[in-house]
Image (cartoon, rainbow, N blue to C red):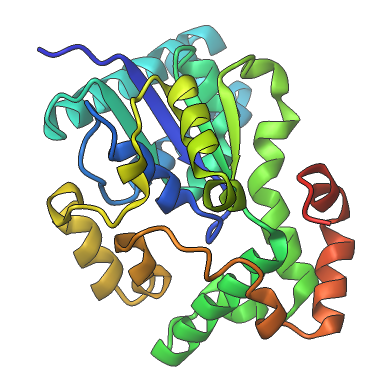
Length: 279
């Protein structure tokens, strides 16, 4: 069996460039075709966290100790990664992505001490504007989603944005040098430098063609079918995922949001915006 050199988990808030980040990494030599989101693994990790939080009540009779519980879950994760590695053609580099997996980054870092983590970041104002696009599509399709329920409540949308990043930054000691942040805007404004950073961090050799429209053969048919056909997830689909990188959406919030809405996001995400040089 071909060896698996690196496992990279891609996370970040929805609409922040997680699919683009995964697509770029999957374009590299010895990676694999761009797959659908890794939602099954996210569910496994949610079950792990639930069991860990209530271990003394419900876990000790089945596992004996927290160390034994962690060891059991490492075996499950190992089996999942091995099966995924085989199914995706035994690549040297495995790149798995789901925005909601970000809520479990610190647990993954503990359970898989060799894994690496890429955190996609985008201007909160543009991210919220893109969330509104999804909410409108859900409403039009009659999908009762959390985004549709939030409407244009900028405080709630800003709070949702920030929750995606709370977990990794609450446990920096678990990552050491295994966590990298990538601003969506940097990939557009400084593509060569950003690709070089990604290559160095992941070990995946990336070329400028990583920013071109992907070869259709390098994209899983499952991804295209699920995202386009499913009532809920289809609302997240973007044709830009299959096109060359473009900066058209940078600053789009100015067309989408009122001055009052922009001011609310900047107030709610003040520390984040300053830390990552958005304002």
